[in-house]
Amino acid sequence: MAGSDQKSIVLTIDDDPIILNSVLSTLKQEYSVRPFTSGESALKFLENNMADLVLLDYNMPQMSGFDVLRILQADSRLRQIPVIFLTGSVNGEDEIEALELGAMDYLLKPFKPKSLLTRVHLQLELYKYRHHLEALVAEKTQQLLQINRRLEMRDKITLDLLARASDLRDHDTGTHIMRTTGYARIIAEDLLANPTEGYIITESQCEDITESMKLHDIGKIAMPDQVLLKPGRLTDEEFEIIKSHPLHGCEMLRDAVKELEDDSLLKVALDIAYSHHEKWDGTGYPCRLKGTDIPLSARVSAIADVFDALTSSRPYKKAFSCEDALEILYKDAGTHFDPYLISVVKRHEQDFVNIANQN
Image (cartoon, rainbow, N blue to C red; front, top):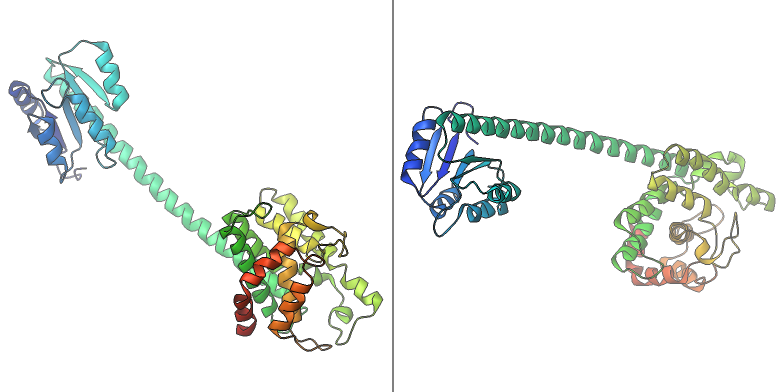
């Protein structure tokens, strides 16, 4: 498109030199006119140049105006150029076809100079206005994208801080969250890459499982210090108190889910917080769910959480080696853990070991 200090470029395509001269004399004072006697020569020019408007004759030998218009409309760069059809035909069907193909206007020959000038001026003004609107939309879209990126970053930081706060209540360094999130990502990304009936997830669901893993123990915020931080083994009564943390986590997240009903991440976080201590054979807690009644995200979380617990030291136990911890997972496939998800772990043993060793 010509700059604001330059004349707009008008291509006129007509095999009649009289028409070309008439167009040139009518428009040359206000516009830069580029005359062509064939569609082929005009299209050749447009390969390396641009125009602000095309005046296109309908009836030309070899390549008709309709042929030229189809080529212009098929090109993502050229289809934005407004086209005014010029023709001596009074066939209304030709007019309709031209407009359907993408022409912006239709002018019968012989035309009055004032009529041509007015229509060219109108189409160029509309062209400039359309581009102005497109530029505004692009600018606003970019601003919205930046705002959304900042909001997403803020949400992630808030989520990470909340997860770290809950983790620090139960662990010295807060790296438990980092490790369990890493283990969950390994399993979720395998499910995404290898669709299997009953275990098919989308990319968005994969990310939700991974990010929601950070909140699996958020209910422990509500646990009393004398129980949560006890250095030795828990009594049966104390263990019952600890077993209530999924209920507390559920209560915390349920209100958030009610406020943001379309937030998939919070819904997955609720499933994980509530059900990550359920067992495949139905002997877990708090609801004794069994098999696939347990949300898939919670089944993934259970494996990640238990593997990290096994490979971490506690005041009342030493850390298991990764090899021994993996053997325990494999032994409990079909009782504690979803057997298919355990088969996924087997495919990624070294990845689990790498995360455990890095942290």
